[in-house]
Image (cartoon, rainbow, N blue to C red; front, side):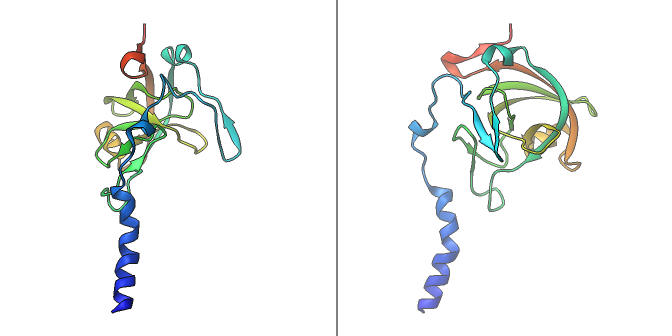
Length: 165
């Protein structure tokens, strides 16, 4: 009996993190998140809001899924936001968080507007990571990678939002 209870507890323990509530204050950020950060020993300095509002680039895009347990448990973005497998969002190394970008597949011509709320990709040669749901809309989820064109539409949320001029 004790072994069964311990086994049940051990199996349920990973699920506890799925149901933890996040204090709304933890998600608050004043304006834009542009603080330098370090990944794999490399210091990365995000661009300014003005730089971002003029940013356009072409490069390789991949997709990722921060959820666990087959999408039942939320992942977290760099802004502390919950991520579900059906959400459409993006990750960029140096854009201020959050911002909205238009992503266009150079192969399919399909386009989507995404909210950049996470950091990445941290694989050499990659410009952008997007959610699997967004990759499906752009037509490359099964391929894994695609060449894309991105342009920033706005930076910030609410009263801090600044649009491309």
